[in-house]
Each structure stands twice: as structure tokens, then as C-alpha cells.
Length: 258
Length: 66
Image 1 (cartoon, chains in turn orange, blue):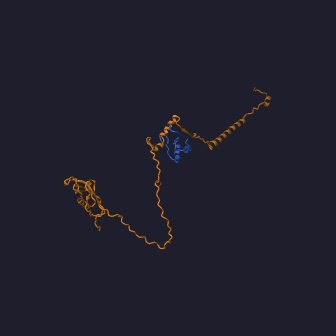
Image 2 (cartoon, chains in turn orange, yellow; image 1 turned 135 degrees about the vertical axis):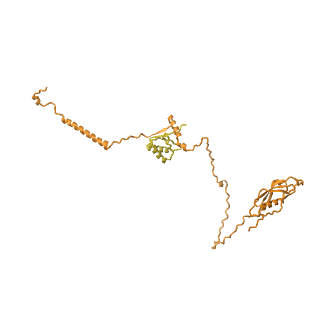
Image 3 (cartoon, each protein chain N blue to C red; image 1 turned 90 degrees about the horizontal axis):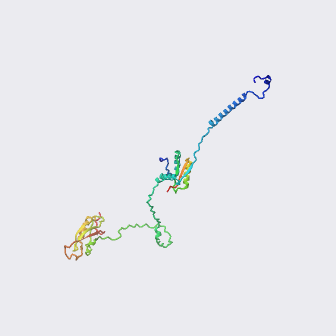
């Protein structure tokens, strides 16, 4: 087959057997261009505009915890146990009962009792012309002393233990105080014999004035009860004890003020 | 804050936002428990506030078991 004739050698070939250099060069150029394009794209989309990787958050969900399941009941019990409102709220003990106060309605006194109104004085028209001169000076009225009543007499009284006697015969009252202070009522425990005389006289308190105390004691010793026939005229009959009270009045002589 | 990582919140609504921020930072869940005198609007406001703060787990506690 290698020994071809010259005719056959000059005759054009049915297929073109040219060397594929140009095609290979085009292929290499295409590869180079593609590589360049990939590099450019990588630079643009990875360096200049880096891709933002975003992770979407999990979707929000609102759950409802119900006691339908055992897990829900357990969770609700735990929530009740950890409820801060329980710790911050005053819990009324179960045995305590609320004592509701009755509803009290305020009723004014003028609703319960209607006040009586006074009659208005008749309206009188003063037809006189007013005086051009001022009225007269207001008279100065001195305040009278507060003691509007008469003098209060000094009184002597005896307790009920001595009621078995007739009323006592009291001498004239004449007491002289040693100072200007108001004495207090003085009481004596007295022992009255059946003859009506006061045998013993012990002061139970002081009037505040020793001289008045002594005068009162002497005064009582001069008092005499009317005769009592209980003793039968015996002077050694048992004594009757009672209490004599002297209440001082305003008839006590007082020392002159200097 | 308790050992279990939960908060007990009793606060005015104005201060809830601060507490929700803290809960969000620590990734806590929110359980909303309201008594019967609380209005439905308040519950929804708190729920929306929790969702707006990015808390993704919000639970509404129902009635306690008898």
C-alpha cells in the first residue's frame, strides 16, 4: 500500500486530510476564554458581591398549654407552683371568711327629725329718714360676776346609819378659813351614843385647811341628836357609827386680802 | 431567674420590654399566664411584644388542672 503510483499521488483526495491545528487552536482558545470568564465571574460574584448567607429564623409559634394531656397538666402544675403572683399576693387562709360589713346608709338628723322653724318677725318698713349724725357711743356694759345666785350655805349631812335618830340639832354655822382657797368637803366618822351626843369624831379626809378641819371637828362635837329611847336612858349603851359630811359653802369667812 | 432558666415576671407593661430583651438574649421561652381578671387585649399585647422581640417560643398557660 505504501507504493502508490504518481497519478494517484497527484489526484486530489476524496477527504481533506489537512492537519487539525487550526481546530485545536480554536479549541484551546475556547478553553482559555471560558476559564477567563469563570475567573471574572468568580471575582464579581464572590469577591465584589459576596453572597449573603442568611439563615432564616425558626418560625415563631404560640403554643397553648392545656390540661388535656398529662404533660400539659404537669406543666401547668409547675407553672402554678412557680407563679410569682402567688408569692407577691396575700393569700387568705381557706378557713377565713370575709365578714362583710352591713351597708350603712347615712341618714342626716334633719331627715329623721324635721326642725321647727321660727316665725319670721313682721317686716316693718322704717319710713324715717336716716340721721346724718352718727349714733351715740356704744355704752360699755360691765360683765357681771358669774355668781348669779345667792350665797351657797354650808351643809352638814349624816349617813344612813344615823337615821334611827331624830334630826340633829345643829348649832349655828360659823367657820373661818385661814386662806382664800376653796376647801374640799370633809368627812368624819362619828360615833353617836344613844343619848344623841357625838362621842367620837375622826376625820376621814382633810378639807385642805387645817383650821377648818379643827373647826369642823369641834362643830360636830357640839351637835346633838334628838333623844332616842332605844338606849333606855342608859349612858353605856353601844355607840352608833356613821359618817358626817360637811360641804362648804360660800358663807365661810375668809381672811381679808391685803 | 431560677435554676431552670425561667423568669418570674410581675411588672408593669412598660417594663416588660426590658425583660423580654433579656429573655431574648438568653434564648428563653415565654410562658404567659393570666388570671381571669386580665383582659384579652393585655394578653395579646404581651404575646405580640414577645414575638416582636424575637422570642420564637411563646406559650399561653391554660386553666390549672382541678
